Image (cartoon, rainbow, N blue to C red; front, side, top):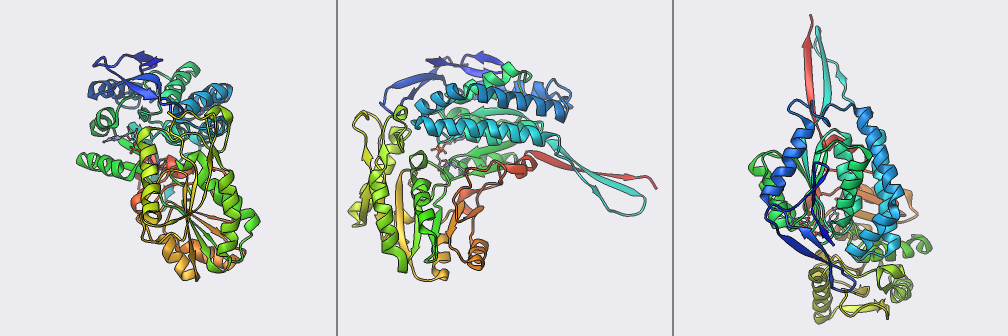
Amino acid sequence: MRKNHFIANAWAQPSAGQYLDSFDPSNGEVLAQLAQGHAADIDLAVQAAQAALGESFDGPWGRLSALERSRLLMKLAAAVTEHAQELAELEAIDCGKSFKTAQADANALARYFEYYAGAADKLHGETLPFNAGYTVLTVREPHGVTAHIVPWNYPMQIFGRTVGAALAAGNACVVKPAEDASLSLLRLAELAAEVGFPAGALNVVTGYGREAGQALTEHPGVAHISFTGSTQTGRMVALAAAERHCPVTLELGGKSPQIVFEDADLAAAVPVLVNAIAQNAGQTCSAGSRVLVQRTIYEQVLAALVPRFEALQSGPPALNLDMGPLVNRKQYEQVRGFVGQAEAQGLTVAARGRIHAEASSKGFYQEAVLFRDVPADSALAQQEVFGPVLAVMPFDTEEEAVRLANGTDFGLVAGIWSRDGARQLRVARKMRCGQVFINNYGAGGGVELPFGGVKASGHGREKGFEALYGFTVLKTIAIHHG
Ligand code: NAD
């Protein structure tokens, strides 16, 4: 399968004539050849987006009313629902997800478009009380051309939450998917054209991060950058953006804790603790990769976790097991490196999951691993593994739990399990992160719920109305009428 860029509602061959291989993680074989974008391809896409907007927002996309944008987004949501099976299959094979996970991602994508379709014509400014003789108002305007750099772990969902919001706010988008997982996003751009988005409103340029991605961050025609990916790359993107004073939203990594107090409902908590790391084989920015358990119930919680971990199975996406393969060889070697290093340091493996007999030995399969008594200063407790590896550690007091939970460079999400209402809120308010879940974890995704990090987990918010605000520029107009 050979795929070109999608620019101005048409397939575009790569300017340099080069294609890169994208691999099937379930067997290591070449799945698709993707156009290898460079600065020239990015330039074409940015020009197409600029033309769609028009110099004074008078182009075929720029002049549409909020209601017209809303209706187009609603049509795109319907097209996604209609093609959900096809999109899920592409995503499952490309990323190595089980079909049921990819299907859930397709449903979430449609929901993002519905949500932002509904929000497009409710995004308004204010009138402000001011001096006598004045009327002052604010208006929210699009940035212009927005860049969207997407990772491989949830391409459709991340596309939905960034591109959906940006289009609703009236921006024209240039998307650079991950080189490992571009197929679903190319199809989405095609669907957008089919439902009537004007040429240039949504463009997808594939390629490597250091070529197409970097060129996009450096392009002077880009007015806002939304980056989702690793903390390390996020720093490079922020530096490129700073060079030309371009606003940037960074959604980066995490090492998110779940705190289990002795009064927790364990029957409710334990399955969620497992799912929070098994979901997408641990390749989730908000994975619950650390579990802090009050010492009085520590052995009880471990005894409940062990059989559930041992039952976790990894296998080909079509088998719909708990986990598919990891996305690529680099990720596979990184996760194996973390596990091997922790074992070499004498950390205790309490349980391991299984790999299904039908899994190819050439696929990137990693079984789930449960480590107990993990020291708070170890790599396993401090660094993002981005695989199905859970670090469990005990604590004695609430103060210690808060210190441990906040004691990494990251700050994305936290979970609190307790029946004590005062403690729930007290601890929630002390968490240094962007989302806190009490007696649940993730709230089932929640497209309405603002999401993002602090510290090395990034800054800016996606999802909900906050994302819409981020994709607009607030202008104040003061009228002196005497
Ligand atoms: P990555 O940083 O390697 O790549 C992400 C994207 O950036 C890819 O499209 C890549 O091609 C591009 N890129 C790479 N170098 C670039 C450069 N110099 N300039 C511009 N673009 C460049 O990340 P990854 O390995 O694909 O994804 C995994 C990481 O993403 C994890 O750390 C995970 O926590 C994070 N993530 C965060 C969130 C969130 O919302 N906070 C969501 C998903 C993933």
